[in-house]
Length: 584
Image (cartoon, rainbow, N blue to C red; front, top):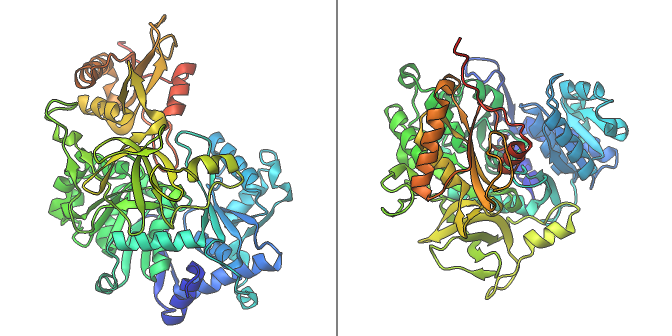
């Protein structure tokens, strides 16, 4: 009986020890340095790390994982699981310019998880040694560069006593509306969610054989649930091969992602909506001529709002390279459910619901709501009235509630938040539900996500979703950067950056949008156009439109807009608005 990914890794190492588990493109380029690790080697390295942890009596404690992109993280993570140590993936320090916000988050995670050991590579461990003044918390924490743990240690490994209910790792949420919380993901949660991923994406034995086990290409950060549970752990679950490279290398040159897909011809690859937009921005004729995307059968799109316009444009642009519309795979998930909850049907075009002709965005096909697919097998999804705790009928918007074996154990050392989020009861239903905090509706069994419950903008008793306002703003003028707009409400009496004095009271909407650097001279025209479009489409008078430089709007580690942080910066007057160019 398989109890954990540790058991599956042992099986893969026994049956096909020489098969490549992971390859890492060190420079992000297919013709650059490439590192590979086989299943036999991965099992040996994981056991060596596990034995080192066991020898120090660390089973049952937490280990902070601070690795740069690369294969060493995978050995460290699986080593924790093999030792019965709770892994805590984190963002490593990045040289002398390590940003203050990232440092604060790392401190918070180390303290909250009560980490007893830090695993990293030599570079990270050396960097941490030089950060004693900024991180006095490290004084009593053991630190080790896992590549310095000798292979011979693997002989001392003892199989841990794991059950489905044993906590495998803490996945700290990205904190789009609140402080990060450690989600306790069990070994049973992991196995169930890997099953859901496998079924949703069509990773059948026949397909795996057809692809010669080449199933994934990914640049997604492995410290985040989407990059970890999907391409990294589904690879170990299935015994297949994944090609990985750094998120930074993708951001520097987005075409590297498509080039790697063309070179290694995987079945599955994906990212948030903004990743597809970045590829569109850099898609020149020279790139298209050299690409072959015909093998790409599942193009995952999740972690942030999926835009109909993005799906359409991506298909149109990359169809000449063999990309098919049916490959698009919008999905929905969250850390509290391990990862995946719903997904589109593999090899089937995503469902779009177009707005009524009389509604907002009338006549705008790109404003259609995109389905995130159907719940995984044995996952129950209902739409609930968040106040009355009653199920709502199909088509009605409410809070997304769910239950199933992938729903995590709760929040680490936070009984109150666990009770509020993981222990909800629903009239007419037995058992407990997970409250996601997300809004959506069901239509013909498919889930359509409309926004965050806490982000709702209520004006004169009418609900408005910030995503709707953001989309209208971005479609109003081409200078606005896709996926880089934040809409929120402020009290009419508040004054923000550029706001008018002496508001009339009541909630009023504000839009903050990043614009292209060369568009500053048109800022007044852009502002007027955005106001006009939102007024016409939503019947709202916008209190303020603030245009800011690229990279200004804060986002979570998974790329979600942090509207609350943007709102705070607006009210504090710390948003750097784009200034008109000097006429001289």
